[in-house]
Image 1: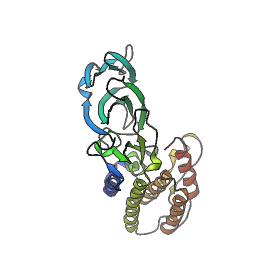
Image 2: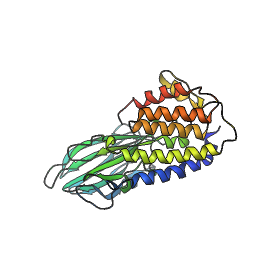
Image 3: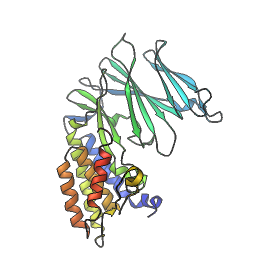
Image 4: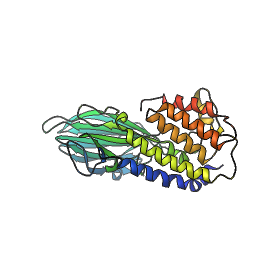
Length: 323
């Protein structure tokens, strides 16, 4: 079915997942979306817009921006390269890093946590809902030089989506330590069009410190549990709309290269079952992931055709990178 027409049909998925994601942000006393700086947690102090430096007629981005605490960002087109932009990060006139993107730099986020200050530069490579990268810089304390911490590739993200922009709702505090939440988009357009695959994006967490940004998702078990609860509700709602049992969960293909991405899930229920399985895997509950998938395929479909192939594909994609 045409994906463009599916956006309206799957609107209820967005409502259910909005509730689930809201629940994830306030899921427990020990896990809080941040409002104020407390016990070393980070606070987003400012978002600096880099878009006004774009000259669309000249196809270039150029200018200098003061980013606070002696940090300046200098934007300039890359010589002899169409559309490419270079951004130089300086701290008190000393170069901390030089970045390049194939399109433009969209924003710089400023954060603080105790004595540390952080700058997050957002780059956009151009393309349909892809791709963004966040570059992190830190000044550990007053008088210390600014240095690069690392980068996080956001994958298939959009500027106006929660997983595309750093926002206060994506800053978490756990046991006095700040964490940044992103959404892993490795399953973008898996078995369906991009718009309907959002429900398969799962949260990942990075611990923010002057020493680095280690991936620390295992500490947020409760967040995954809340999202799975929301998916369970959506599955029940989707199953209630069935007038008869579909034959199978989808046309699932396996193999190398693009073969996996030629799979097609058979409707909203199949997408939701797949999304819940992905979230169980992200929560390191593999046994539960396969038990619930097998149980509900047997409950809602006439056959289990495609089930084993779907399992192989999900494991293959999850193994592509850490989470």
